[in-house]
Length: 329
Image 1 (tube, rainbow, N blue to C red):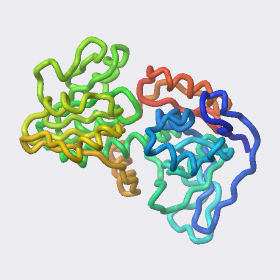
Image 2: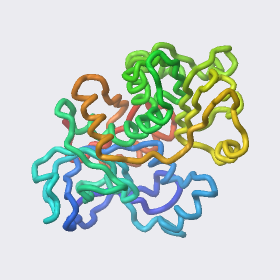
Image 3: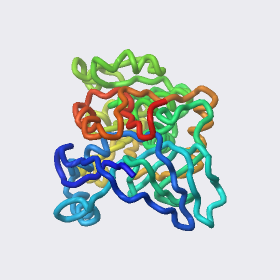
Image 4: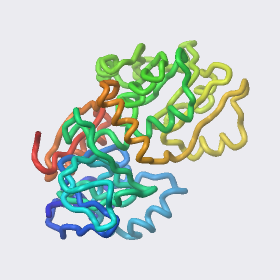
């Protein structure tokens, strides 16, 4: 089968389109013919090995100390079940599925094997009203947004600010926060503001022209997707009993959370999202009732995955960058 293999740390030049062996499902696994995948900021960070030191050492040992062990990247997919292991009862050949691969990765290939049920990856029947490309863009960003917004315990009528709202996680976070009944302010760059309004943002802030921590506004919840905002100023922008959630916390954020309280009952939310099948099914229900949709910026064929990585690295993508694997739709 064709796949894009990660051969060295660093630039997208280390991604090679080549022939590799087609996997065979184990007793508890599903063999998926991949129709679509994505390139996320997380894929780009992993390929370039841009991790804080406390994460870099264990990840390097896992991936390969000198170079990656011919790993196929890709964290999410949508496709068709081709075969199932003898212990699998949840799926059958012909099922249209979508999900995340966890640390197995591997979705930038024509086929992938995933466990039918696991604590690492998640897999479910696709929403009936989505294409493969639209469904592939849901699991990672949708599940992360759902995790942090649930942790923030948003109440109807609360004011929610989402920093970095124009990417894979942020576009779902806007829609989910609106479904929870919040008044949503989205922060991102100039080119993304119209798109943010189109998916439900009540207010938008262009961070290239305005610092939300300096405009005098306060919020009940601030969700900083990329974790690049000021810790102290973000806390000051919270109402009493407000919640500050970091989707990608810096080490300094974690240290400060241990010894510094925001006061007034303010809470800082940091942690790794748990991926659960029931949460993916929850997102599926929202999609099928018209409350949630994928925003796709660009599509690339599998052989141009390196170009997709280059585009993601520009920081200009709006929503998702999709890899079409088994042909366009």
